[in-house]
Image (tube, rainbow, N blue to C red; front, top):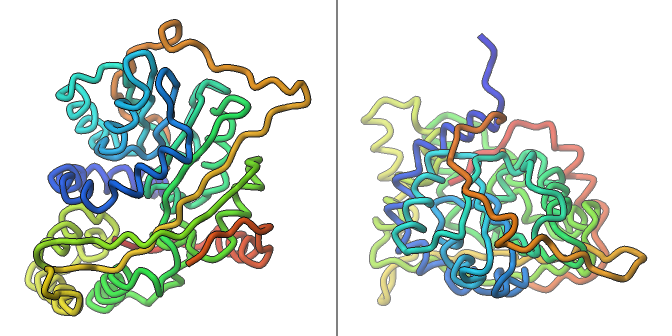
Amino acid sequence: MNAPAPQSAAATAWDDAAHGWNRHSPLIRSWLSDATASMLDAAGIMPGGRALDVAASAGDQTLDIARRVGASGFVLATDVSPGILRLAADKLRSAGLHHVGFQPADAQALGAEASGFDAAVCRLGLMFCPEPLLALKEVHRALREGGRFGALVFSRPENNPCITITIRTAQSHAGAMAGDPYAPGALLSLGRPGLVEALMQEAGFEAVSVQARSTPFVAARCEDYVDFVRSAGSPVIEMLKPLAAAAREAAWADIARQLDRYTGANGWVGPNELLLCSGVKPITASGQARKSPRPDVVRRKLEVQPPDRGTVTQHDTPPRRMAARHWRENRGLKRGASP
């Protein structure tokens, strides 16, 4: 039997975590609402526009995008997991937002309409791509000239101690070797300074900007965060899955003990830092940005089908070549584990 393609395996893993992710949507929204609003601003999401939501997950930010573009606009939400997209579709329908299509797709092979979108976003998904440059090129291809892209990814390990503690503790219990946190596909893989800039510029974006944002995860108790990770954090779930039930429980208890250091008078406040990334698809020599097709002309209902293929400071300076070189040298490594 052939081994499954990495992104096919990722789709299965995220399908398994879909309900846990959806169940924690209120907690996720509380954590990411401000950063998400900034991402939508950076992408230039406007009324009447056509927007592409890459790695849409359970549709939290898709809801915000759909409300911004309004009924005269259109949103296409994609994700490698058909299961999680079905939950997103239910969420949008329940909100009475019907100008949204859903299409299972690997971010590295979107198959989206060329030059068909005014804006695109990707919230906490780009770093999971073993080949993020391919994903960025796909987004660039899908945007019209002058279209904008906004994304959120995690920054460096030392500024995300909750993630680092969770991963290292899980690795210890699973008997796994501690890997390179910047390994392609790992949760912190795009946190290396200069790397996102280099990749976005190589993909063809201009006016690239990357800004670090402190985005702490606030919960009433440490256990609430651990429950979120153990029900929705697919990579850690997969890492601990081979263990016997008692050993798994011991691992989660140890993770909770390690993270309890962030419990204080105001509850549990876990430090996290994100990078807000943005760029523009340049206008060609004609000097005219081609408008994407009118939403009322090209909108079509997209049914969720199983995918046919397997997905600080401001840095406005030129990309750091060492960071890009490190990514290329490691692009063939096994995808890192992360929550």
